Length: 493
Image (cartoon, rainbow, N blue to C red; front, side):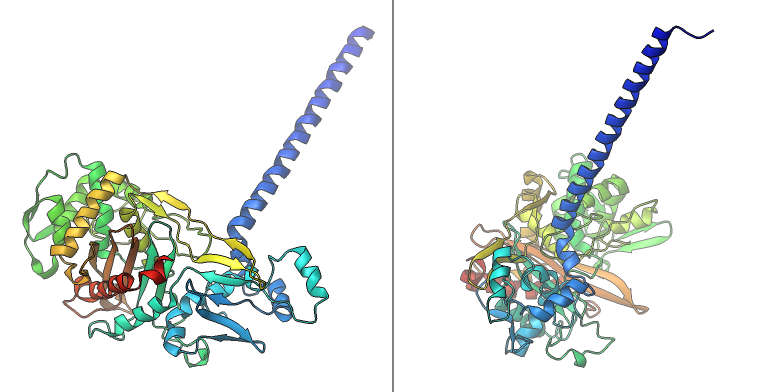
């Protein structure tokens, strides 16, 4: 017997409504997916755009280079760093100046990764020009030119830094790197990597020199005692009353049969946190690391940017590393003074010092100041942007006070400059290279001044046995601070 026709009609109506609802839901879902894809596309272009343009094998780039003359690259004071004459890329006439800036600038052959020549291709080869400008160029008898890129760096300071490395017997001929930045704006005013090479003679570079490698942004070094800045902040956050406690340094800490010793087998006995920092006592920092635990130390390191994926607008920086996973007590203790498997670039350590100087706020590093068209119209300008807040203003002030004591009466006295308040931290980091034990000398610090708001990080590779950051990197820092004082107009305008 067939069912009631009214019931069947009602069932069909319910079925149709359910189907319509499902179709609407599906359409809404598809719309949402397309919207998400569009948003991600815009995000990717904004975030990765320069990285895509910098890709050396991009066929669109190769084609554009055949028809467009690359724009000029200038430093913050208008010094011409790179231009194109008769179809050939040319650089400054002074070889030392060319060498000092080559890793930051890049070279015409693309031997240096992520230099300005490659990373700012979108501007230099006219990809960002307007449609009207492109149409106008079709009726011009002259070959189209790309935009001019103005950098935040002072090329004269970069050249001076290479001279400072060669001014001292302990650092002459050594590999290393230096970064100087304005900690209030994030503007990078100097970035140097050694060894360097002449961009007009890349054939002279030997394969084993690693001269094409940008040590300022690509090399991960053990930070050594400069990491005590971060361990100090971790202790302030995790160990109750740490500023009032006394830490006993017996000269040797044995953990599971492995020994931790201070430089020169020093015995510091009872130390406050401040004195432990100023004297750079490894034993005290190992004890604090074990007391707070690996999780607390890693959490603070990550607050400073370790283990983050750096996606800065103007430059590519290798991600710094704090180890994750299960670790032994010895590894944790070593991490307290910047050893174990911690790795950091000089650029990132400059950001760490900048955060202390800037009341806990770490600014994103900026290399691109502005872009202008061939007619002089401003195309773009990079504005300051906060990268992260690493610590409170109160903790930054306290650590800054400790860093000032390091320079006034501790291990960093060779960075002092008359008339300036300098805050800093030295470091000596041990590692191996080609099966050989080596030591890196570090200095990170800043000028405590609103008129000269500059921070820096310096690393010197393979320093002599018995030397440290105080005798190798600190004197170079002092020279740089002196330059900033004497040439304030070049770096603050």
